[in-house]
Length: 318
Image (cartoon, rainbow, N blue to C red):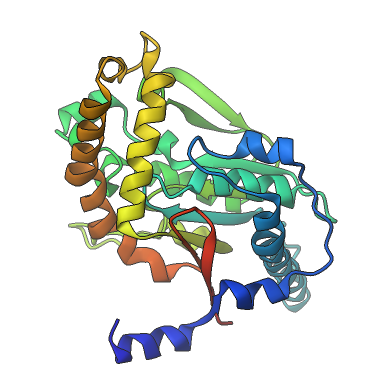
């Protein structure tokens, strides 16, 4: 990073190394047990209670402060306008590469936030449910670009977030099956009433491409009250992806109904070569071209080391 770029980032973010960040760890008791942490952790990660206490408890305090600040602003605006303002859910966005650990982070935040003093109701939504189904992707010749921005029904996602912000009830979203690698037909998941919505996905911080009609469209991130980018070195992400592929080969891929069942019989060498080829041809280009460039649009960037521990935290200045 050149000196000018570093100066710009320092003007936007507070940057903390791990030993600096842990100073913000207070005597807040842990609200999660080792057994619960093990259940929500991904298949290749090893989160510890110490990591939760030193890194994620301060993060929960920051999110709680953002939520409190939003409530104050809403109340002041109501006083200013004299109009009753419906309280909208607080939306948290989580972005990052394949294999970065977004789903684990989302589940961890859900578990920690639900035990804060206000005991909020929380819903977790992965953007996988807004992928086009495989039939449409085949028709558009996008099956090999699944996970790229154009493989998502962004209009549907933005409409959903707009309904959430408007406080609408009885919302439903599609259901995505990782086993079948597809949206399940005629299957919908009802979204219960909630105070916090956590949306996690590859491209949630991306800006929209200008449409041919030049009609301006909101970004997905326009609906976020707080956003996190989970970062790591590309070589670590590739290694984690290969490790996850090998684990899935022994687990989910072994089911005869699995879309990837053909990989279950690969030898270790063949499986590693296959995973690396998928990474190099699909996931790495998507990371470099579409995901990583959105990193500094987040409120917070969490930089992982090769062992999944957080080494650096960047927090956007107010």
